Image (tube, rainbow, N blue to C red):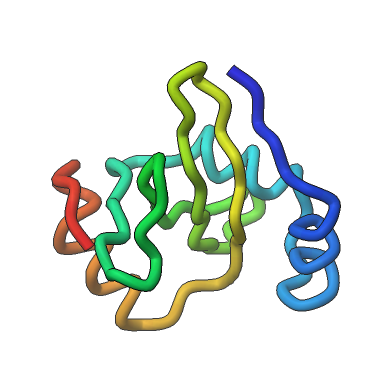
Length: 101
């Protein structure tokens, strides 16, 4: 398995969201719930777009959005501090481990 982030996404993470690759890795390591699938029509991808909310080692909470390919590679689409509605959805569905959007 490899974590892949395109140059364009790395630039967006750094400039728009002030998120570093290491913070994303920390969120994967610290994740306590399951992944949710974004089933909205305008976010429909193959493989499906997944997301979760977790904390970095320093307690920064991030929403991590990614795709998991059949070969095991994880492609990061974005990561940013979640809003209250995203936190509510993840607490309701993600912590239980259900896949939902």
